[in-house]
Image (cartoon, rainbow, N blue to C red; front, side):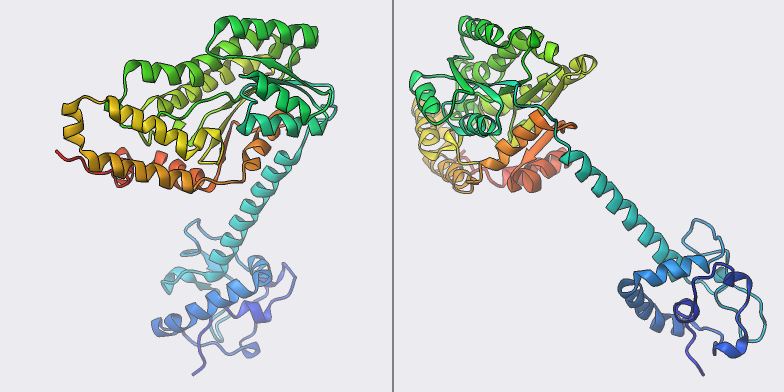
Length: 420
């Protein structure tokens, strides 16, 4: 008794003719017997293997398949095989098995659609604006870190960079490493008078043509500790730099950006998606997300695009172990005795160890972040959000989408246990 292969047979007897489904195959051309459940149990793995090895056969199989219901071939007619000697098409639902031809062709179609979507995304991502050499871009926080690297990167590209530094030394060092295309200005984002003065300086340089790009990069992160260890002033210090300073700079330059129909790039963090520790840092980055979202919707009508950069842990001055430990130790020393007793010295030591792990896992590939910033400034279709770093993409970002009870459980695993 020959093995019944009701789905595999067309792979060996088909041709490219679309008229073949209307011409039943003579019984003498191939030996087929009535299938049994045992036969299907043996043949399904073989069919799957053929589907994986020969996708071109699936394309042939589609031409032989009569239209069926959306339930993957469980009903309807398949004219590729006829019972031996009857010349009557089999109906799949009579034999209670899934048509592997139909399923295979559906899977192939889905993969083709997915591949086309990915190609379209890559095509959009690769389109870069022309004539950017005369465009002005202001970057805050250029003394070190992302801002310093981005300023050099854009200057080498030929763009006109206005680098805002907090210190004279930072400005002088940056000018020594760049050409005349980069100019510097001293800016303290927490000082409204300094922000206003810098905005007037920018206006005099760019004129009515406007400012093409604003990168709000200035930030501060050395405030990681349990919330109870900090004061209102500790929270306010971080919020003034990371959030309110950003808002002040943006509002002072928004008219110039609208004139140029330019770009605003705000540096947030993975901590702007999910709050991983206490202090003002996560709060400030959540605020950056909210401000950027509202600004993006408001500026859309003016042709201004707003992007958010969400870096994970990278080795910059913001994520250095020694400054973080100095800050953490100062918080612990100021904590009242009754609070210290509740947490215990062991809690402090274990918390310090966890912070050290975070900084030790920091990536040294800082250019990944600045490349995203550059793309947001120069691409025809900039992204709304750029999540940068493996920790951000595979830990913090997925955790932010989990149900709260799960994300709370996962993140609490990294927190030490208090004494009481």
